[in-house]
Image (cartoon, rainbow, N blue to C red; front, side, top):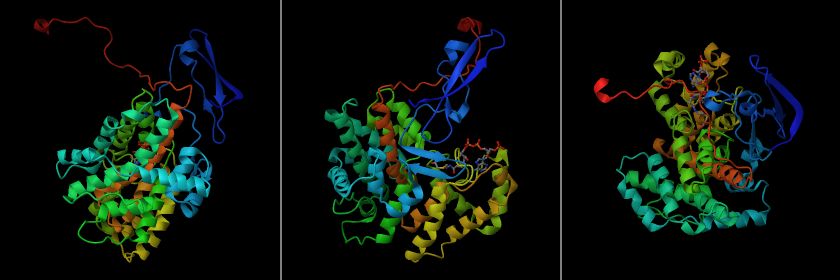
Length: 434
Ligand code: CMC
């Protein structure tokens, strides 16, 4: 736990006159957090915070976001610098270990990941249990959960070496599982990982190679995918990471916890938004239709939201969206697809929405998912695989947060409270008398 700032808030119950002295805990940057641990003991109440918008259930040293300033730091390093100069494997090391690696450390880490890229052949057979049109997120989440049935020898969560082997295994194998899910959907044979390739190139090879002809890797596509992985690698206590922490806090095995994270990511309010954005853009179709869809997004009874817009924490801009928007132009030009109608439509939609009072007053800006789908589709990744790509990258963050939590001697089971609004106590009525 971080130090107290010396600042204390006093809360008094006017009825009983009882008071609670609540210290403010400080982080290394950003606003402090009111420590409410003594509230129930001192005042007999707990906090009420639907959606946890004001609740920090943990301290963390991994990622920092300043939502008003549009700042995102991994272990202190700005996302813009990492996006420009780093690679996904280097960022993975940084997020997991806390420091940028030396060349030797990076080579060793990359070697460890490569060593684990294959999955057990029996695990591969699981895919045959799925219908060809099963969503790949369903397959990925189920197969990751099944991994807990394979590695009994390294599942002691209190053994740091076991945790390290788990982290290498899951980061190495999730692309293999993801690609197997894709191949199953297509009815194509599974393509084994290639350990002579870098992480992103190997993903592309497993997704797109076929046994009957040589696969020509496109370095532009590999670089773009690597950058998308960097941008998605972690995002502090988002819904899926909090899910991994909550599941892991019970002592559940880490594969089960990561599988829970994949399931949480799938929702359209979270990682599923990248798939939903593309469906929405196709539904809008032309610039002329934009006003109609904006009206729908503003109408609370329509249940339609502008997908890829808005964020719980960013209230100015999402720095990742800014990087991806710039990247779209470069990547599409390099791939010879710069006349991309979906990008044109997305740009116009952003322009029109950002002049609209509804979006301006609510500080709703494009988020990371608004433009990522345009790049995924330009490099040939089908829409149903967009959220899976997100899951591959976010696995690094999930693992880092799980490790941080398990190695914290003060770890407690995650167990929120509730404000009960159901019936008060009443007596059982015999069925004949109801
Ligand atoms: N379209 C229309 N209205 C919106 C939108 C939107 N995309 N997002 C928020 N609002 C409105 C919302 O109706 C509310 O209006 P009012 O104050 O009149 O009731 C106000 O803005 C505040 O929204 P909120 O639902 O309280 O905000 P939240 O912090 O609970 O939700 C969000 C954040 C990301 C779930 C939400 O903005 C949303 O549903 N966006 C669309 C889905 C999306 O793009 N998700 C990806 C998030 S970023 C990547 C990731 O996390 O994986």
